[in-house]
Length: 347
Image 1 (cartoon, rainbow, N blue to C red):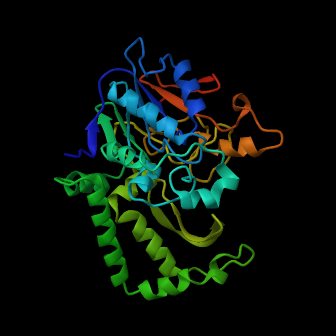
Image 2: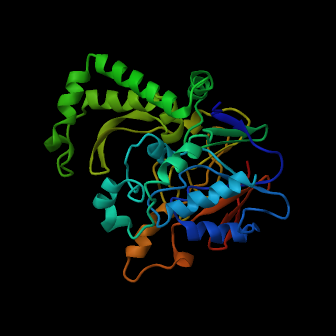
Image 3: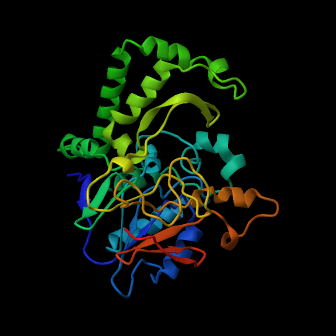
């Protein structure tokens, strides 16, 4: 029976951020952490991944194969990220051309060359991937991909009972679509969504589109698995242009309302090691944050290294501003694939 919430083992952990198919960076980092090629550590430490092992990078299959053998040897665990869920739900999204041929045709100029997975291997991958949890926890630490939301966690505890993850996800999706289509503003949403002249022109700020905002707000919050793995949205005061279209909601900094004593480690939010104003994650980049300063994002944007490979001249990994990082717990230390070590600003 599928268990969406599972317990972490006792002992020290190395919690690794979003890998995004960067197999070489992963191997470099685990070597620096003292693990062998099978994920064994002489001090009995365990690896924990915050999700998004795949997409964008050059070798997602190698990352997933390596994780699977380390997992089966009892050396590594993971929580599912939104990119793994896209695979499970057969939903081709950005950076997934290694798995979905239609995305390969669309994205080869960005991410290729990449190692692809053969068709006969895909069912095996999705079968075991669907057994991975959404939440890992113990008394001193909580790990989830994007957002620790108590109501959504309660829903997955009760809503996936006696079901597999894919069936439960699709049922929530169907219920959500039905609910949204019954809303009095849904016809306005369809009209606004279809108006490309309104949404796609970066040089002309549109008025607030309330129906579009309502749709995005509710869609982010009413599907518990999506909420936990992609985060939730809030309304904005004025539209902003992002991702090639105008937006009327934005990501919610849920950590500012998190008041439990147990620290939470997440990925997903593409943190930068170079100090800059991100608009969402606070600085400095080695600080815990949130209402009680006990939430930490361990994703330092290694998934953007495809940009390094396209640069003229290409940027070598040891000079990249995009890094793969591990949080050593309970030592409260950061280690990066380029060898840098940093003390985290304490809880």
